[in-house]
Image (cartoon, rainbow, N blue to C red):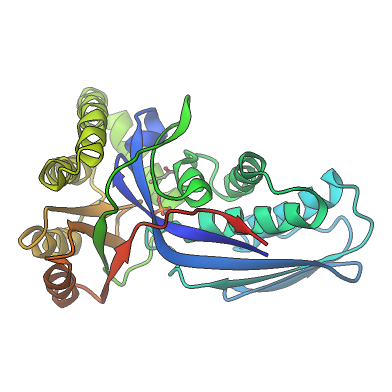
Amino acid sequence: MGSAPAKVVLLGEHFVVHGTGALLCAINKRVRVTADIRGDTIRIRSALGDAVLGPGEALPAGHPLGPLAHLAARAISRFGHKGGLEIAVESEIPPGVGLGSSSACCVAAAGALRGLFADPDRADSMAAALEAERTAFGAASGADSAACTYGGIIEYDSISGHHTVEGPLLRLAVADSGRAHSTAEVVRKVDGFRRDNGAEFADLCKKVSGLIPRARAAIEGGDLEGLGSCMSENQECLDRIGVSDGVLRSMVRAGDGPSYGAKVTGAGDGGCVIALADEECIGRVVESLGAASEGSFAASVDPSGLDTF
Ligand code: PMV
C-alpha cells in the first residue's frame, strides 16, 4: 500500500513551468493506493472509473486512468513480473482543484507498486510518478510530485530539484471555488500569454524568483507576515497572467482580511484559494473564505510525504 498527501503551492505555480523556483506545502489530506499481484490482467479501481487491460493493452490517450495504467505496465516490465496486477485508489483529495490529486495518486501508486517487488525508495517512486504524470500532462514541472513524495514544505526548481524548508508548522485555510480545471489547458493558456507578452512575462518570472528566498527566510524565521505578503505579491503576478478571475479574486479578498495573505493555489481558472493563518485566526479565516466559496477547510502541514507499507 502507498499513501501520499495533497499539496498547496505557497509561491510560484505556472512560473515554475518556465524555470523559476516554487515553494510548496504538503497538507493533511491523503490518497491511498493498494497494489496486489493478482490474475493475468491490469485491473484498476478508482472513483474516476474502472479499467481492465490484457497483456500489452494500453488505454486511449487522455483516459483519466492512463497514468496509473502506465505505472502498472512499467512495474511489470521493470521488475520482470509475469502475472497481473490489481490497483485500488481511495482518495480524500478533490480532483482538478489545485490540490495535486493526480500527482498524489501517481506518487502513492508508484510507491505501492515498487513495494510489491523491491525496497521502498522515494527518489525512484517520485521519478516513476512524474514519468506517469507526464504521459497525461507533458509540461508538468515536477513540483507537485516532489511535494507529495517528500511532504513538509519544500522549495523546488526543475534544475536542482527539491529542498526541505524547516520552520514552524503553518496553518492554512483552503477554499474551493467549486469549478474544476484542466491543469494542461491552463498551462497552455499561460504559454499563450508568455508568447504574446514576452517582456512582461520575463519581468514577472524575475519578480517571482525574487519572492522565493524572501519567503523561505520568512518561513525559517517564523515570520508569517513576511510570508503572507510574499503570497499576496505572488497573487498579483497570477492575476497578470490571467489565471485568477472575478470569483477567485473575491475569494482572495475574503481570505486576505483576517489572514496574513491569500492567493490562488495550483493552476487557477477555478480550483482553490489558500490563506495563511495561525492557531489564533484559523477559525475566522476558514469562516470568511467559506462564505465566499463553495466550501473551505483548515489544513496543516503533512510532514511525512509518501508512506509505503
Ligand atoms: O492545479 P495543479 O494541482 O495541477 O497544480 C499545477 C501547478 C502548475 O505550476 C500550474 C503546473 C506544474 O506542473 O507545476
